[in-house]
Length: 210
Image (spheres, rainbow, N blue to C red):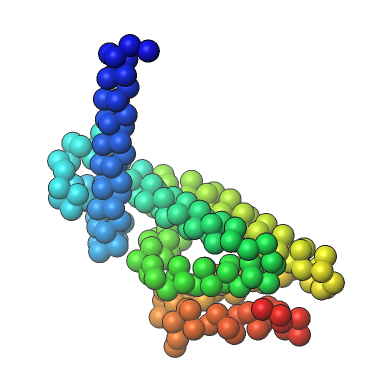
């Protein structure tokens, strides 16, 4: 490969990195504005100001506010799933994986109330053009979480336990999601992470060995 080819590749690589960095800066700014203002009150001009870019620059990356909001949500969900998989990969023991799953979910809710607010806005105040798309993604996300839990309880049964993997995965997700939604609307007297021991006791009952 000649020197010009190397030079062009380096320039292209730098441009791609700069473009990706700018895109992430816009997403960060958008999340801040959506949290402060809510989806319907937020404007692209406010997001551009927060990101310190021109409005035209935003439209080069995202053709609409709806699309930008969708990307903020999907980026958050993707980050959650990658973090969960990384944590679960640190152990092959089903007891530890169950504990990690519950801890990770409730710690996420506890530390990111602003993201929980954005998620709840989708369901309480449907957003034209993007709500169905995001709900489909959330269904995929929910199915993936259920499968992870089913695998955990199936592994427990191989070691002599008697869980119903389908029922236990549904019950576990239902409990964690109820804590998340009740926390958002202010019904809980304790922070989500304070429910971790009780959730584990409730899931495992007499089989508790975590």
